[in-house]
Image 1 (cartoon, rainbow, N blue to C red):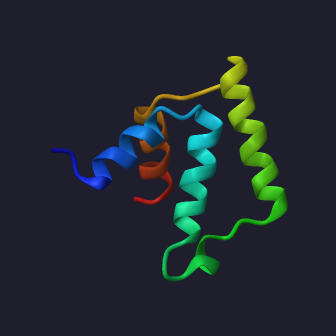
Image 2: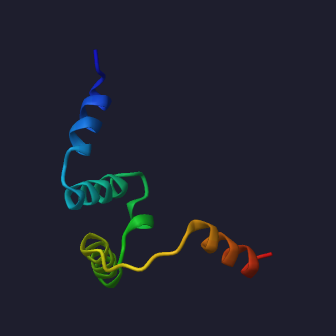
Length: 76
């Protein structure tokens, strides 16, 4: 028998990507210190823009290996 958590998780994972993102955002805000997770309208807009570019296939990307190399070079 599935737990409530497993049922909710399963239902949530069947949501469209934009609804999952919205739900994740709301869940984060429901934690003890929501002010620590609040985003400015400009940051929310940038996140939406980037998500849209990923959906459209126009986003540029880098490998995680390249990203970590840059971080390690900047913060030895």
